[in-house]
Structures are given as structure tokens and as C-alpha cells.
Length: 370
Image 1 (tube, rainbow, N blue to C red):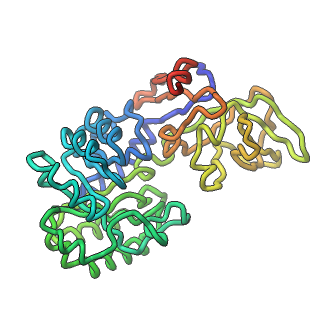
Image 2 (cartoon, one colour):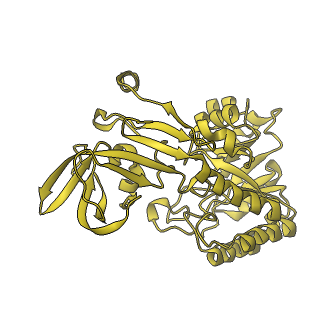
Image 3 (cartoon, rainbow, N blue to C red):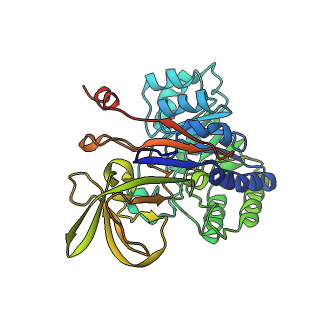
């Protein structure tokens, strides 16, 4: 099948590889896994994911509703700040509502009474420790607004909640670091944890990275769960979908300015925004060699660059260029900058069948504006 570029290609076999790892961890630890919709919300592959995962976690009303309608299972709702209207909507379908502060918990607590979430209210706690390569994404950065930091406030309102969330990791592939921080949380919050029924350890734990010690990780979770008699939830985003999708593009032109600059029919700002935000280079499905190129997007942004590469082959107009590991924080962040055509969403099923799930048109562009 010839598909017009650009498009995101999701490979269900690659997704299944990650799901098998989740399955192993669940079997040993007893933990439950919730897909973090802020990272990946492409519901056309939810039928596969929900065979292995237990539900979804969200950062907004729309995400929570999507999780409820398209995924099922546990529907955890979290937001840095809720309005009263948010709670009125969320309580119709969320079985768990997590507040970011004691202030919000107290001001909105009454609105949750006589709902299915009433027995499963939670509070995000900022443990003042974290793992992140980027200050921008560090949950415990200086002056962080993410989670309650005052233990006394938490203790004074413990009767209002049944669980807590500690989201303090970002792409943490270091098991020893994870273990050390979990021990620190156990020591600091032990008295609080013993009064709770469940805890979410958030996302950002890169347990699907190659050579990650799966058994040690699972047993650490089991030990933590048994020590405090808690139901544990993990909220993977990247770890659930890592290396499961490509962004397929085509070279439109090659410009010479000291180096060869291959311009593709996509854009880092519009179609892979996280790479721009964190100043990271895209990953290519290519053999390395001596042919040096800057591969750039077609938007007007001067810094719309996917990266500097040395390839085994020579690129020319019409060459197909595939960027790998493009599932996380891409489709959820794609935008209409410059009015560029959005990449289609394509899925390669377990059977090998390739399906074009979604194509975007001028009408989509117009409807997104006013």
C-alpha cells in the first residue's frame, strides 16, 4: 500500500512487546497499570492495550472522558487545578479523582459526595525528590506547583482521601535510583502510607528500556505494596509505547549551505514538538555512513531541524525518511503551525494489515480556527 506522506505509522507488534513486559511486572508485583493519555491518546489501538493495562490516567476532563469511553477499566482523573464545573463533569465517569493540593481538596470535596469517586479520592504529594534530565519536566523543581509539599497539611486531611500520588520520575531508566527514592518516600511518608488504601507512583519510569532489571523492579514494587498494604498503580506513558511508531516523511528539496540540508514534508514544531522543546535530535531508521545531512522541516521556523546525521545512503528529492520512536508526545501535541498538512495516522495491525485510521484535510484546519 502506498500512503501519502507524512504519516505516523504505529506498529502493534512493537506495542505488544511493551505490553508483554507490563504483563511480567504485573504478575510478580500485583501492581496495576494505567495508560497516561497525556503522552499517547490514539484510541485506535486501545483494544490491544486494554488487554494488558488496567485503565487510564488523565490530566484534563477531555482526557478522562476519552479514557472512560474508549478504554474502560479504571478511570483516574488528575489536574493541576480543577474548576467546580470540571468536578461536576468528572464525577459522572471517573472512579478516582486526585487533587493537586489540600486547598483544592477542601474546596471541592463536598462536590464529590455520593459519587463513585467519593471512596477513591486522592492527593498528589510532592516528595521534594525527583529524577529528570530536564528542569522543564522536573516535578520537584524549585517552586514546583506539582503536589502538596506540607506533610502536616496532608496528615490533617488524611480522613478525606483513600490514596495518594507520587509522580516524581521523568524517563528514569536507573533502577538503583528509583529504588533509593522509593525507600526515601517509605521513610518520610510511612505513617501516612499506612493509613491509605492505594498509591500511584506516577509515570516516567523507563522499565521498557533494553536491559532494564524487570524482576528487581517488580519485586521492589511488591515489597512496597506488602509493607504498607497498598494497592499500587503505575502510570506509564512513554514506557508503554516506546519504539512503537515512526514518522514517515519524504524529501522535497536539498539545499546547500556549507552542508547539505534535506527538507522533508513534515515539521518538528508541528509534528514532533517535544524534540524542539527539549532540544533533542530525532532518531532515524537508517544505517550510518559518510553522507552528511541536516534533515529539516518545511515550516518557516529557522530552527525547524530534526537533526544532523551521517547516512550510508545519499538522499535525493523523493527519498523516504523514517523517524523512529515517534509515538510519545507527538500525536497529542501535533498542531496547525503554518497550516501544514498534519500527518495521517496509520496502524500496522498484529496480522500485518495496514490501516489508514485518520487523514486530515483543509476542513480540519478551518474547523480548528474561527
